[in-house]
Length: 634
Image (cartoon, rainbow, N blue to C red; front, side, top):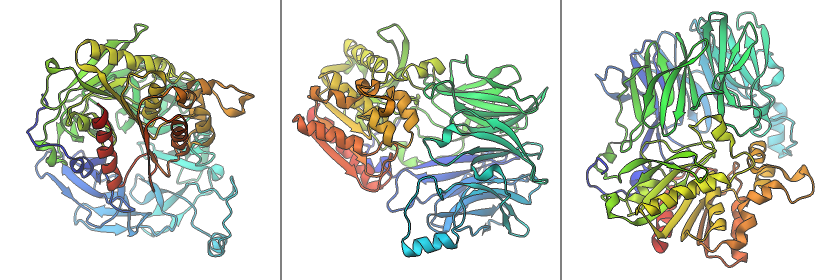
């Protein structure tokens, strides 16, 4: 059974929790700073704060910023005497760079940049800080705003971040004339205080920009730029390390040649120019890189669990393995800090040697201490073609397998390049422990196309969404029915984003499910490729675009809307009105089809919300409405 007390779970407990984010381990390894953020917001802004915790555990965690503000991106100075961070304490919605002095606790606002600060990197030597920030409005911008002469011409005057330098002694911000006006994505200084590795894109557009990445070296002292050439699609997470042949730069990017084959670690020998994919034959999937004085660390998704490895000259050496998932890895010497949690415990900050074990040093959600959770267990089973698959089963709270069969809800993860990890499944969107508290068994499948099983596993859904991944899911449902866990007459399905697509797809393929919840789901891949933020990626998933000639098109065959005439299952459709990832027109399309065919359904649009639901009242509505939908039908 779940390992906690006997208090019931409420929707308020779920959405009113606070979660640690963005840990930053001090260079001396003695303290960790982290951002504590609420799961929901009541107004227009999310109020977050910086906290510090001693690694030795002597003093416990303490809040170090007290203003009502959105605060993020803590970065230490090289001497561990100060923390630089972003905060909108002066003007809400406009972040400036601030500094927290560890010795006296004084916070100083360092910038007054009208466009706001996007990111920052304190440099070696202590005098300069790199700022990433857009251009401040000029006289023409002010005139246009004043006169409402604000027609948007695509490609002109588009906002983009530029590299700027803040001199901490003079307070002056300068903007070097470098990179040809390209959008600066990320900066990382060489560990010896040498040049900056700078990652840029042609623009900030999420569809085109990620395919235009380039790497540069920038010497802050001389102003000299050296071009290192193009990088892989959606490159990010720069790290340096020194090899026997000189300095190397590593980064994460999508695995070529397609856009749907997962993420790889790329290794560029700076002097020789040789670029290698270091994870091409690895059966795990990299999720993060961390720069250390001794080399680069890689965090891997490994099935339901996680691993930490070192990137050596010729191999990737696994140093430790951990249950669930690891996020936000930060290091100082041989000590690391990371965000992780357990099956029945929330995500917290953990510290320890890179080889493990890790020790929890925060307790940000004490209110969960009295909650009884449903038993969670890993599942291993085979697809219809024999492929070994994994997933999780969460049983109703207080119940054992032998007491089945239970009503079963299958919740499909998003992505599809994502996964379920063996950790606490409690979130604002349809989640296992929320339904388990109401008496449901919940199946959380990791079908092909997801993360944690290597590149080929991820690439298998390119142009084939809804094909093998659907039968992978169905095979798990069939197993749970055969084992007496699931009642075949009381099956439901749900999901958000790509999971919403799978829920909409499922009810067009079978009438086995008595209820479905489609959250921010894809219903037409051609329309998504044309209107979504990540159009080319969606085209790779769906198999084509509308401008590829006279149809029918490949994406029509894998779009749920094409099968809407077959749907008989009651469907709850949930969507954010301002969703740019999966625009709300996808939900409108499904709603109109179901209305046309007389299918029972409910269509809910959440004002002001994007792809994720953030406002407290809306998160409460999602939780309560979802459970009530299944309660009435299962």
